[in-house]
Length: 564
Image (cartoon, rainbow, N blue to C red; front, side, top):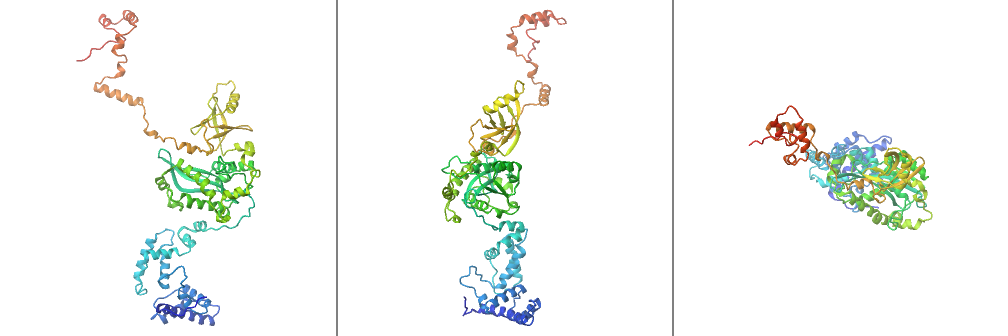
């Protein structure tokens, strides 16, 4: 409870102004209990007190004063005098703050997204025009103006400047909670697009980052992920299936990354990659239940969304080339390309280390400060967790179906890699038999994010065909391509065309320059010719030539006299 005993002169002055409006409205409501406050009533009070109180207020403000005046037992001092515990103190009277809010609404809260500096300039000009009304008060500074803007509710700011869809998305709240008893009971999956570009090893631009991730709700651990790098990273079926298979496997180093297994229920985003036919086929083979979130309702999978926020603030923030979480129209692809500073290989090493070392080993206050790995070790039992290895041929399911030609000796080439094994060669050579064909079209399943192997399909039989380069598992084709030197084909050397060569010959002959094509045999080869007998026989039996010409013949042609 508050009690105000002593009032300063300016506080007493403001109390008198507000009290005049409230008492007049109280008398009016006593006689007309069903009527509301009118502008005529406010104008009537203003005419009575304008000599002592020249600032005119609005109906909305008077109603706000009146409501609180009644709540405070008709003690106006309680709302005029600021509490010493108040978090926001303004040294300006309400009339100045009201005018400031009006200018903020007019010049800052607009879809054109004007800056705070522009809005403050317009406010300053309007404040000067109202000189008599605000006589004795300084113009609020830009920092004060910005602080007033930031005091507005965030939803109202987002709604006015970016629209309802953006405001709803940025100010959403989780609509429900999940009652999860065991690990792998519920897995949430979603995609994250990051405003950060990466470079290839030769310094050229590789693309923007996209991440697909799967999270166990019970332990808050990241079960698996896929990193997509491209000009426009897509939430494709191949990326989703690789993320799911990565989350369902025992990792290469279980001591660092122990989590992995098949969940009972999966909560998917409503994106095209999650709804793709190949993704549904993969989940049907696994046998888990799938629930799809409604479009524009990310609060239905709040845990993975919170994990993404943690990644942004703990991992991406401060990295070279990261342009923070912003509205799409604010960060162009050109800006992201220019800011790129980290290579694909460097990012993959850093991100893997962050997941294994930091994220899964950081205490979570929603789990009584236990880490995800500690909760996993406490509740997961090896004999209870089912992994992808327990499903046999289903591990060979991959997200991208294509038809490639298999050479009967060298295997299947794809994206600069070659895949071959004895089982594949035996199957292809059996089909080709004694034919002269050197290749055969084969249906294959490819995981764009795992270049270690592909799956060749022959009817109902699937053969896993490894990469001949012994590429480690979960190494993507894009990662391998980042080590390839980028070649500008337009700058490669080119041979002369017949037309270009003809123009050169024509020009040399016109200038009297020796043309190499006119003397194909040089003098030394003519002098040392070993076929003189054949030439003599030809010369003796050839008619229509003179003896002088015969004597001068020492080769295949007539020797020309060199010009002096």
